[in-house]
Amino acid sequence: MQATFLKINPADTVVVCLAEKKKGEIIEVGDTRVTLAEDVPAGHKVLLRDVKEGENIIKYGYPIGHARKDLKAGEWVNENNLKTNLSGTLEYTYNPVNEPLNIKKENRTFKGYVRKSGDVGVRNEIWIVPTVGCVNGIAERLAKKLREETGCKGIDSIYSWHHNFGCSQLSGDHENTRKVLRDIVLHPNAGGVLVLGLGCENNQPDAFMEMLGDYDKDRVRLLVTQKVEGDEIEAGMQLPRRTSARRFPSANCA
Image (cartoon, rainbow, N blue to C red):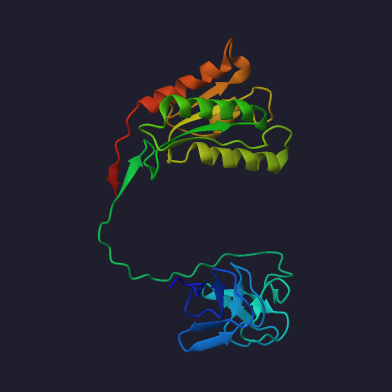
């Protein structure tokens, strides 16, 4: 029988419902048996034991907050009866706890794609990444046309990473967009990336390419549509076509 709830850590005081549960249903975990006090949606938590007001509620083996009031086993734990322990804290520190997993080192490997950077991808795809939302339409047309031409033979898939940013953004908001797009471009799951710019956006294409650092210029190319004389779609197809024609033998990666 398929499980309908999950206790993630032995120390947890809640289980997570994997399917919608109805009031009156029974949940049994080891020697613990509770009756649901109310309907609980899928993905939500149910208490396994009574807790007092202010007492921590445990999930993943750690406190996720404390009870706003006394709660009974079988109650649905949600934002109405659970309060964060971070309330009022202005400065946070990260204090990691090293927990040995006691996993045997068996020199296991997996089939992946080793990039020149040394990073390893588990998929081999072609990505078209706009620097600004203004070229989303062109990016989508390029991805669609290449899928039709190649049938994705020799590669796993072809994507356009459309978004609505990169134009009228300033300061930290603008920089966060650039960082997210940079991480997408450099991700090893892409065997070939076409960075597609407009030319007049805040996220200037040349400055963005400098942000990539010492990247693989065979794998990542730039096209600025305002600099194209003639058919920008045909110009944009050149790199993806060359990339799709290449063969990427997988390797056993440690």
